[in-house]
Image (cartoon, rainbow, N blue to C red):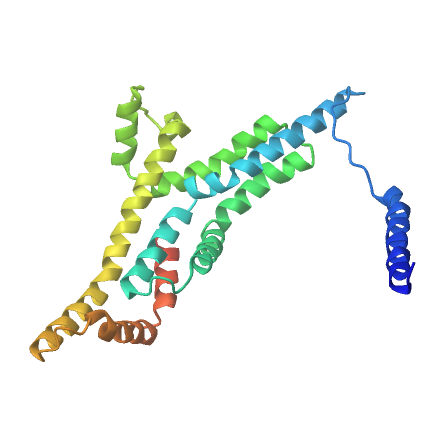
Length: 248
């Protein structure tokens, strides 16, 4: 055996011994279902199951019963009106929409925390009462934003008795009515945002045609002017202010 072969054999032996030495230190994870030793174990297991279910539904609930739908649609209309298809990127728009949602929904979240979550965590009320108390601020917010016409549509489609009070409107009627009301409001705000940028595009197009520069894409000339207008009027400040005020 030459020297090179001996070196390779020694290295392989060291690797084998190191792996054999490190193998016992790797932890082993066991996941199983055991019999509950007390009623408290069953209660904790059910709470964990409910918590995982709520966390899995949290993104859908955030979209359906909060201000997120209106905010993200208006921000998307703003980007489309500017003509910058990738600026700001989707991650920035979604992040901004989330933080504006937390800002506009802060009073509702505080009411849910004070009247439902904290009493339940301190074990002063059962979970059924906590859910009922948490539902009240959410319904109040949606009723302030939903149109009566949209509620009437889904009441008619669901073939239920005409509700006399807000408490008689079920959630499966209120949520879709709230969503289409939010879509209508968001599209109305988006139309108003498009108007000044549409005027700039028309002026640039007419100017280029009058100069005989019909081969030049108008978007190449109008885009800097639209960005300049948006910056001069502090557009993001106005958009955020309009969205926040639209929920009051």
